[in-house]
Length: 481
Image (cartoon, rainbow, N blue to C red; front, side, top):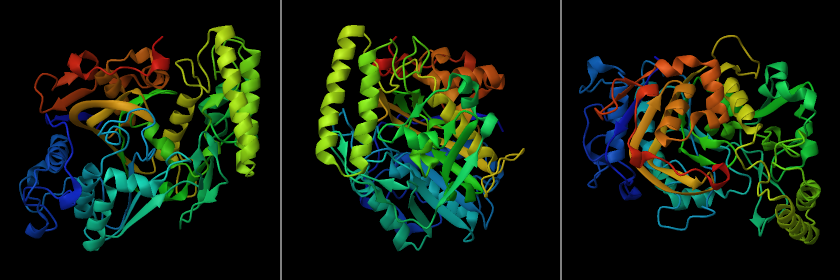
């Protein structure tokens, strides 16, 4: 359809999970009956329903018991993946009451989407709910703090078959910047290595012979996936088994990518995070990398010490890892004092690596078949539904401050979603690398019309709309160039 819909509900909070995120109205199509109706208003459920209608799905049957808005996308017997953002169990900067509501996808929106997936499947097929959060994320704690356990209780008591999955290969626990030994995730799903080769956007930099790095992973491991002429990603097979993916991002500012929306949310499909280049070791000034701006011997040693610390942590050499962590931080401080360059680990507007990884992963989600082979035609349907009741600004993605917008945004096109998001955030589109790529390669996004219940922005081209000034996001501190 190549469209985008914005439901502007004027709602700036989420329902509590005491009633399992049930709707407060008995809609004709509702599959669970009057016993599963909440006495507490659930505006998020109402907004999601309005969003599906606003997208034009099954309009002829709206208001009837057989309204099946996702039926044109999801067929009985298919496998459907719900892909929220479960990045972390802790907001690293903001400590206010809604610290997780601006960090992870809220379960009330997942619940509403789940109901319409159940309607579309008609009792046949499989539902997977999963993400690959940061390696130090305690998912059980996140589920408890964010209110997901109430959603899981609803799923269990109604006999809905949902595979709730941690897509990571392993996890660890961090204490004062040092991780312990890795713990393998027990999962029925394994991995597929998808080889993009010269079709990877990283191939454009092969002549520079970059050494790629992912924080808290040995760069020698990443080198097995990304080197001159080699560009492979290890993806959780649950993603590739899906016939339909419903992507449910939590839009935020991002220290590496500028913003995180629909496209960046697909970083969470990976099994082996070492296969995800986040930065190229070295400095922008001399062309050796993009981890920081100015040439600095001190920061070069800092990168080396950082990798040694990672290796020691994995081996369980905690005392040595702590000593190296102290040395690394000391070198960073000295590097800033001597060069005036505060940037490190690719957390700045000059990062030329992470956006390429993001675009590569979106290509994989769309074109990789169940065996992990890249095909000429799209292999699955993808819908993007943004949880923008409360977004995250400033020190995102793991330390954001709440940015209440009171909207849900939906598109069947990741490029359209992210371009529209950048316009809503009112950040300079040409300064966000993957948005710049979209505008260069997929100019059709400029001609897409917004549909919305907000008449001030509805039926206008995204490129022409002036969004409310109060929606403007404050960028990450390392993106204020």
